[in-house]
Image (cartoon, rainbow, N blue to C red):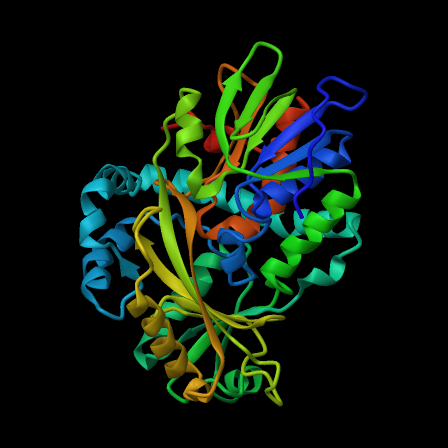
Length: 427
């Protein structure tokens, strides 16, 4: 799959290097191609096999609250101590996590939460139209599925909580419908009888499969003349009229470089004088094979308001995604996290209580900044170097719009967005 890139700077087509071949990097590479740039894509792994691979596939546009809120902080100790809870922080990683956690706590102030909420809403409102443009351009509209989404509660005494949440989202023009009883069973017949009620989001979308989508984006990128180098970028060299990209085997100049490095980019950022509170938030998933089932266990993506995990029907099987584990890039995965996902999924879908089911496990690293906002910006002193990273749980959701925005900055076209919330030097 690796191609040898021909780096001829300043030829007929201006040159761009995109570092990072996750879904944000792939969308960015394609967007640059659309505007006439010759693009080289770098990644130490294969395209779409990092955090993008493990996504639930659901475009979570209703998630407009940042991760750091007073409510989250109040609930965090209980969630952390619960062996089946959604929050994990390995004791051995705690000393390294403390600086990020301190910034996370500061981000929960009322003023910062409101600013982050406005900025997330701005991105999420534009997310699906941007994906529609991206997929229409490459003739892959079928990868976007108008699926709807169910947020479910098991506790009958939390009906008012669901109603309050629906009213809150309605203030942001996010439509939802309260379902109970027969209406809920009709929507998802196999949900456990313990499920009391749900909010249904009729306008929600998912993708056919995150990895298949990434492979399609990459195939079109190559077909349009893009070059891919499967190698780790070790150094970024800032020059007056170019940006150097150094790998173990080459050093090349490009007119522009965009870092879409996800959770792995801190060393490259620090080389350029940039320090951001970026943490590798580890996520876990199960994929349960459903190809041999007579009927799929789920018709829609669903999230549990109480158990804090998501299940989504994808082309590759039923994806079960959860866990927020602040654990960095180096610790091994923990088997008990997968077992927790097994437990929760079986509680909501009794059909999964079948030891014969084929299940695969995966753990990856989400790039999470303390204020839950991505960086979409140019280097403050070297505008030929740009950034699009840090989308936390919303990388797939925001990939296409992030790409449009960062390439607008590259082209010196002022986006219609307020870009201040996404500045790289906001911290």
